[in-house]
Image (cartoon, rainbow, N blue to C red):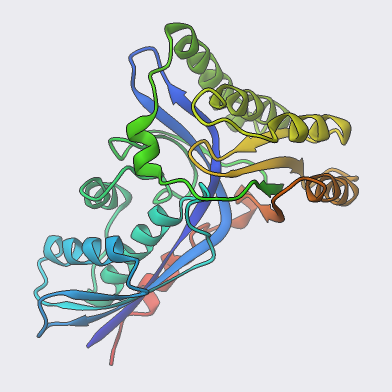
Amino acid sequence: MAQGTGRSFGTFGELLQGTVHSGQHFMVTCPLAAWSTATFRHAPDTTNVDVHPVRKWKAARIAMSALRVAGVAGGGHLTVHSELPEGKGLASSSADLVATVRAVAAAVGTRFHAEDIESLMREIEPSDGVMYDEIVDFDHRNVRVRERLGALPSMIIVAHDEGGQIDTVHYNEAAGAHTDEERREYGRLLTTLRTAVRDGDLAEVGRVATRSAELNTRQNPRRFLDELRQLSQEIDALGVVCAHSGTVLGILIDRTDPDAAAKTEAALAGCAALPGTTAVHRSLGHEDGDWSRQGALHLTHHQRM
């Protein structure tokens, strides 16, 4: 049996999420330095894919689809391990699926491009744009990239999780429509963010992310947004980023700031005073090279067992 491994990073919510004037939904990813890893062992003499843990049944489903698209018979054995907690808005499910497709490709000796992965994921559920190794403007409901924006310098994210879980599929089904005024504002914010990413302007990115978090409270009320926004201002951080269909908020800090360490400690202390849990993450930046790191894995781990 052939075995392959694939990986995919997650995203710390979104730098911006909303709808444009045409009514099309979009999100701008905030790629996160945390990964899902899938290992697939092809079994030509079986007709299904078994997966561990069993709750990752969507990954098993996309593995079967990937085999069929690749023109390969049989099924296999799939194991998925993720550093991304589920139901928090960190794209854990999307990362599992992308990692799985790459693992299948590694096992059977083929390659799926980002557009191919989009097509496979479109059959499963709304998804984040984590198949692209850069920040993207992504139509998550139709699982299609709208624009590839590039990369920013890596940032520190001091995260606060208010607890619980949110099912992204149910969230998208229940979300109400934005007003025309909101759509116009989202359009302006997207234009600003596009320029900020191109210019590496982290301060502007922070302002857009903060405003997006504020606008999101109409769809997903956040108990501690005011506290994190005030804390961000007090320590002179870049702003607040949120998982629009999740439970986490984060304070963005420039890693090159001479006071980054002190600001991180202050942000942690402030978040720790709130009900919930805290953590420190890092966004992926242009200095990280191959973000997914599985680009090499899904080529080098193709082996015969």
